[in-house]
Length: 153
Image 1: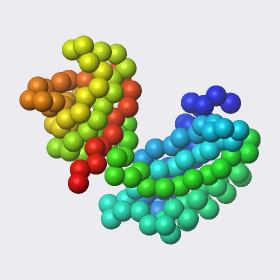
Image 2 (image 1 turned 120 degrees about the horizontal axis):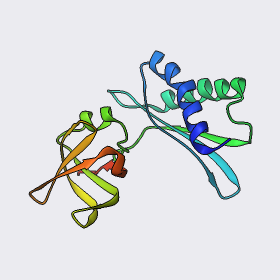
Image 3 (image 1 turned 135 degrees about the horizontal axis):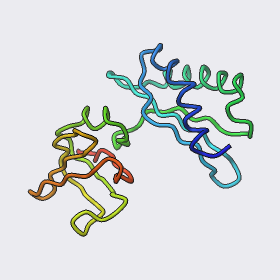
């Protein structure tokens, strides 16, 4: 099975479980690291994630994935919080973190640059609006290769 269908199948399978538990699915990764496959599930909730949350979701989702035989090759399952530098992928991620400092890499150059670090000012019509060094950039979501929060101390 190709990577994209596996990720979508996992997302479709586990997201209802997470919602029932009062958790948000932030991201899913399934990739080969060395000789081994790793499935990483990143979860969050308003008050933050605990080790107990990760353990519970690991058991629930691991059992569900095995019963449904979504992944047939041996893999390691990791469940964790998205961290302070969490990835921003979906509309709700960008809306939730308006006003925060983000780092964004575009798939193709915009004004002769592909790397942007600045304030996320808005998200609408599938477009990320960022202020970088006093200049406003409009970056279509389809052009976003990777976006994440910047850790501010």
